[in-house]
Image (cartoon, rainbow, N blue to C red; front, side, top):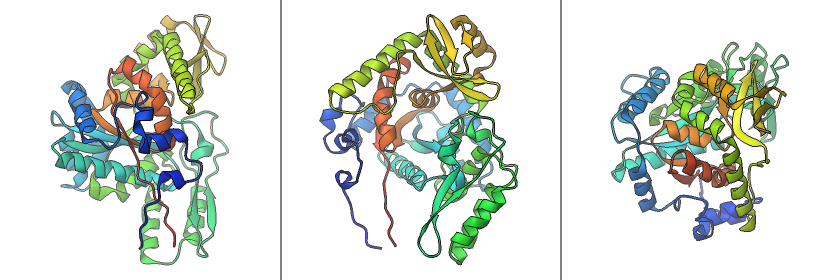
Length: 387
């Protein structure tokens, strides 16, 4: 293999915001907490973490269940023990739960988090890698397919069809029906005949099977591929996490109008600086979704009331009562998701791709309101592999 470094400035469609983030950080410094590659920024981020030990214990319990499936004395179990100790930080990344682990950059994100956590630990900042499984996302069309090369080197699209799916249902809850076997057969026909291909297919077939859901299959495969490195995993739809994040949702309900104004102000400032806003924020937008009858509905704020995308109206007090009785009814928008995640974890750095880094420039105003701190934003490694 002959490696060659290619600057992001030579990659088509790279945004100006991402280019400046990498190569001209002072231009974007008002939108991010610190330069991505500065050791002093990592240390300052770690020192700013105020992570309650009772919360650490509860999150460790949620992390424990997937870790228990790892072999005894494995890196996963060792990292869980490290996480449970006071002062340990997390290097976090995440992705939507897609077919057969989704796009290749899913693995690049995980490997970047693994490497960064190891490097920080060597420098005296104890850190473990954590992968956030975005099981609440409802965009099935974005994750129900993947591409592989066939035996002639041509790209082949593999897609799982789910005709009976409830519209706007969280993807992570969708269970595979027997037609997943047809997709597996297509994958088998595309891959070359080799011991490595057979071993990989055995792993995939174990995870992506009838009866398993997208979240379970994705997390299981990722754990199998990365077992040597001890990545800890959290599924965003876990009801225990929603209970622990109740305060985040409460603030989002109580301050909906102010939050919308702050986000629109940030979008205007990005435009004035010559950059784009990754996520559109309307005047009546909130940063919340509400689960209604199994569907995930966006909430808007109109004339003092909250209105779901299905047309249902709620008073603020009514939503707060629903939050107290069942926090799992609420889920964050793309802009609030990282804030919820970092309210639950002692995050020293978040590893993201170009689009995530763009919307984190918007989320920065939410971090200030909700957490009064923001972890270092670190770009994932990027590779193009040519035969």
